[in-house]
Length: 422
Image (cartoon, rainbow, N blue to C red; front, side, top):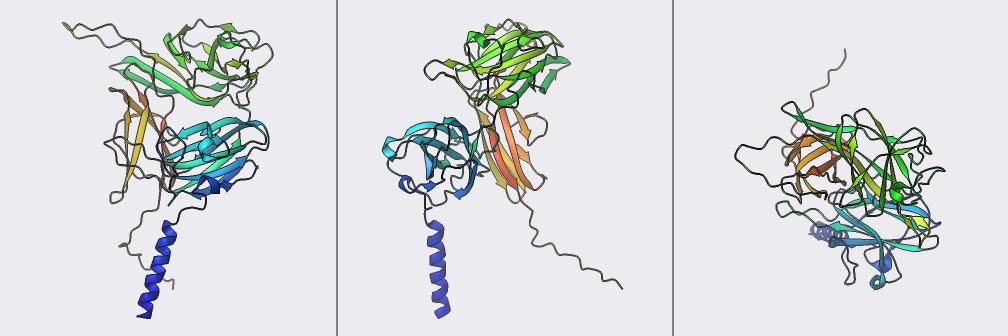
């Protein structure tokens, strides 16, 4: 009888402990991270609750926890939820009370976050300012997809953003071919892209003003045209992005390439010449009020499209409408435990979109939803999914699914007896 009572009490204690809210559940009890960079904090929002005055974000925050960090110096900083295995909402604020917070930046991801330089919430921190950081679950999902998990462990990373490797004209990052598609022996489409950021970037002596703006935080890319024909260049993050396209081998002796602006300023069209090496500059508009250029994290792409397939006889077609708006991609994951299969469903906000998938560092491939992955190596993996709409516009920000493959358990498998040496 005594053992039964003790067991009941122990179970009650364990249950209450499991349901207890984290110590930093409320804004007033935020975990103090000091003023040191870099910081990597392992934490959890399991059992966390919301508060009546929780600030508004792009997605409704679930199970929010709070952190507080004081900037040691004035410099660009990135804050990210690294290696979270659930969809998170990360937001950074200034202000001393929950009801008077002012948002600095927000990052709502659909399925965890794989860390890289200048991802998450990137901003220019000011020395001595105290920043409040909220990490919560992101409950967004498409109606046909299962509701995502909004609680779990995560890693919060704070780091100063270094100078870009391609800050100087002499060290451009090559934009290489990622996908080329042929239909019936005829060229249909070509896409190449890379990631980048202009935080901490500078402008070199003799460098031209890109798009007619003085800017001041440029980075450089190199692209070799695989064929001649109309091409599209884009590096969308905001309307403050500046694009420059040139030929030439010296930063002070460049020849501008004629560009045709599209409705969105971060997209331009030009006539590519096969085999030509193009120099691409990405900069930010100069802000006279702050005396500094805009800085951002972005994805850059170059696309080419072949002729459309011939129309069917007797069918009239309306003239095509100009579409310069890229689609948005969403991905949801699910693990089929009995079959040991990871199942991914992805959708686009534009009907008729196709998809490109990249698992870890493998080659980009065309893919369809649902995507089933099995027989993967143990450890962490990242699946990136891009939607491409009917007009050929590609999502600049891939939907990211971060997941982990564990060792398969075989409870009924017996070990073969060891043979003893004689």
